[in-house]
Image 1 (cartoon, helix red, strand yellow):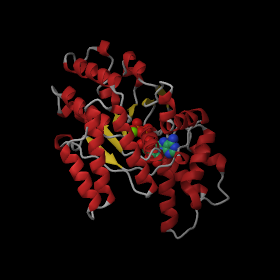
Image 2 (cartoon, helix red, strand yellow):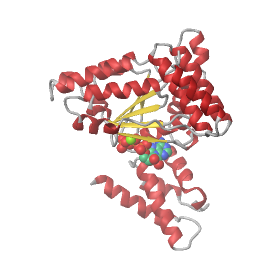
Image 3 (cartoon, rainbow, N blue to C red):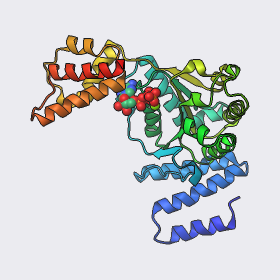
Image 4 (spheres, protein in one colour):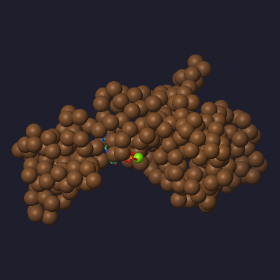
Length: 322
Ligand SMILES: Nc1ncnc2c1ncn2[C@@H]1O[C@H](COP(=O)(O)OP(=O)(O)OP(=O)(O)O)[C@@H](O)[C@H]1O
Ligand SMILES: [Mg+2]
């Protein structure tokens, strides 16, 4: 049960002029306390009550305070990226929607002894929407997004990375959120590659165990550019593995329409633009569109024209090839 101190604080906060967030925060502390005592169901119910009330009042998600020494290694944000902003093949988008749907319906699944998909691995080349997907999940589920920069964690805490991972997984348990482990391969290199014996192996084993044991309400998302480096044992720990790739012609067209928005004149020569953007990632196309929009604004034009867009795309291609 909640401690006497917690109960008193809750009552005090309720009767005083504290804002709602203070009360919510106290209630979440009680939930965390209950989770630590092994009362997972009660913790879950309390968070649910807080969450519903906060949403009903149009409130926002609360960001957790990470321990000081993890500052710089964990970035927390509130996301406002809707699923509609993602340009992906239908099959992939469908799987993202399923993750969101199962999370929203987790109580129903739980009644039948099932759990929602919540350990997700995203793999694919740079700029194809992995980080963006984590943002979408956070926004759609009204959860905060915490990005753990795994490469920095490993370098900074060489020798004590496993201890740091434990702290992070404690937070994953106590503070519901989307936890994105970026540059996942920094930690999760193939154990048989034996490049950095000892430490890396220990870290990887610890990570595998933490992922396996995790039964929280949080979403754990790993992102990697380099799936070949990932250990097979790791794939098994994930409920879903989503593979991203550069956009095809059709996806590129949708992306242009999205990003150009009101700056798209009716008269763009699509063939030229789609040819010029062949092989570019979503992020590079996004960038080229914004460059073209800037030029239009500075030249007091209301829309982007084909030649300018073709030029900014060519510039991106040259950077890409370098
Ligand atoms: N599938 C997509 N649909 C729409 N926009 C996208 C998509 N992918 C990338 N973008 C645009 O490019 C930006 C960068 O993409 P993002 O950070 O998601 O790439 P990433 O796959 O995480 O790359 P990296 O491997 O380098 O981390 C996004 O903020 C968005 O503006
Ligand atoms: Mg990323």
